Length: 294
Image (cartoon, rainbow, N blue to C red; front, side, top):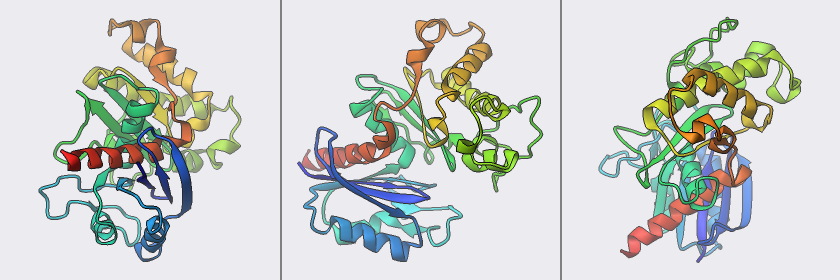
């Protein structure tokens, strides 16, 4: 099979072609500019690839309700040109093949279930910490949707007792994304994350906020695996700090070996590494094809 995959990020688009085993054969990336510049590049890439289906994991918020008149749209994003843009419809006009559609972080969660760190499990949570923070939820053998889609990056969070940064989310100020996404790190400390040494106070504070989100997820959703991805999580010193903070937060209340003795195998990096989003989009395309054949 030849399946197309699009990881439509707020910073860059990654397009690829792969097969039903999750193998990416070819890929290309380019900056996310105005749709009038970005989408022709996407369409041109796939024009000669012979894709039998295409999966799209998109930055959001997006409309994922099939019965909605704006299904397939990017909705309230502040990114210029993309608010209320019919991304899925634009692709439908160009390619008469099954199209899978979900958030970029839900796609990453799905990819990890199919071929990565959550393979064989019936539930997992994927948190991406980068330019923004997103949460993808897989439970009961399927991706979780509801009124819209999970927006775990915007949950309120307790403040670190030594942190007086006001937060930078344009909607909520000091929500999780406003306090812990990459731009918040830079604004708080005057330097990008990779420029800060591993022992810097920034990482203790960052781990505190990520652990708040993970703790909430453990208590609310009880996932079998929690996967932390995104550019900020490339700072490997964060993982032990997050695990320690989650353990302190739970304080022995959740009586499960994964929490009590196997935290290093419970809160993990993506098994697919930086390919989680693209492989997840591939999985969405494959699922769309399977659904179309039934």
